[in-house]
Length: 584
Image 1: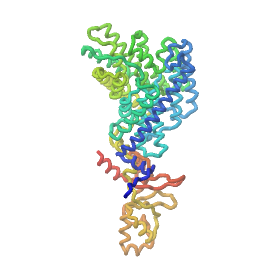
Image 2 (image 1 turned 90 degrees about the horizontal axis):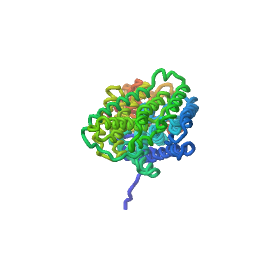
Image 3 (image 1 turned 90 degrees about the vertical axis):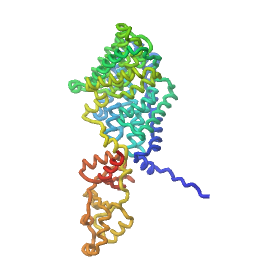
Image 4 (image 1 turned 45 degrees about the vertical axis):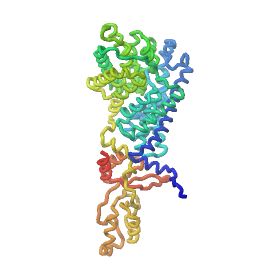
């Protein structure tokens, strides 16, 4: 009986499969691993916050700043900035970039490769900023830590760079999913804010990663959302004008926040130590009277959504907490922003609902609803991520009845921040401040989905420049498409020549009689100057290399042993252009 033949799993074959745009099963497998790893990282981050609370906070609660004596909670931000400064001060400036903005930068310009030192710094800054009482969230650090851990899988396995990009998206989605218990919002956040494109091949592994991240979080902390939201619904369409006004105000607040977070030139010129002292002093002074501004603020958010709060406290949460978060960012501490945005947005919405209920009770019929709408509107406007905010609203409330007013509030807030305040989104504004612009062009997006092994011509042979007739016939025996002419002294880059050009002169008896030895640089035919590109590179990297080096073709190389490099293929500008035309 004939036996079924199964090919033995091979990492080299797995890498070649990942190089293609259609490698969905392989990417889904990576998505599962990335989701589990990121879920574990998120659990570790929360455990570190709980460990810090065990020593510092009453009731072992990392949010219990209100239960501390005024002097203690006022001194904690000063101690926190001192610890952060001592850790970061001796390090190069490039290692101070952290958070979601750093993830987008590395995705856009470094194909998703994450520096290890920045990753370590994110652990320190993420934990100290929250436990130390700065106005900071945990979601930004979680996304950086999860994305970098997922990218590490691909880097460790030497996977093509197009798969690294997907792994970064997987880590982002799993981090948001595990943080809030919102797997759908995690997927949309990753696609809308970080990857900035929607493709089937990209969606599937990100969905799996988000699911696995949520499952890991559920296994440890349960399936409840990060904070409870009461059942609410829009009881009358008469509320719509006040909802629009609320969204307009929140959109302006979001735009101002983004501008403040970018920092003024005067702040940037201050010494780093002075900036840290300013952050710690201002935060401590306000925390003396209003400890609600410290930490993430999910306890205050839950109270805002479920019970009445004093008007002065709501105003402090809406305005001062948002400003303190912007001050941290402008001063050089890359804290998480999503948590503080949700808290401030909910407080601003609650203030508008309270005012509307008092002044216009016949119009504002459901004042409690405005806090929930404000939360989604602030997140959407500041991040310019309307879909992610709407799905977060749906998953956090588990109430489809508020989606209609939520959509109205989100759209108005996003348009207000974008048109009246020139807000491109917090993370995009941060990148532009650094003089960088993410790759959003359709050409680069398409070319980034595929690695060079999927397009390169593998049928080639290497040869020295000078060969005899027998060696020439031997080279053509394997019927190669390209000859790669290598300088024996390595003083010149390789050249590429079509093997057909050599075949023509071998059929010319008169030409062979005149040339006892064949100089391949003298053979009639077109020769292409070559520049190197690594085997893991995407087509967008190859295209950039072609433009920067001024050549028309690249030789693809990879290391087979220490200090030994092998030429695996040839990729021409024409091959890249033909691929793009076929896939449009």
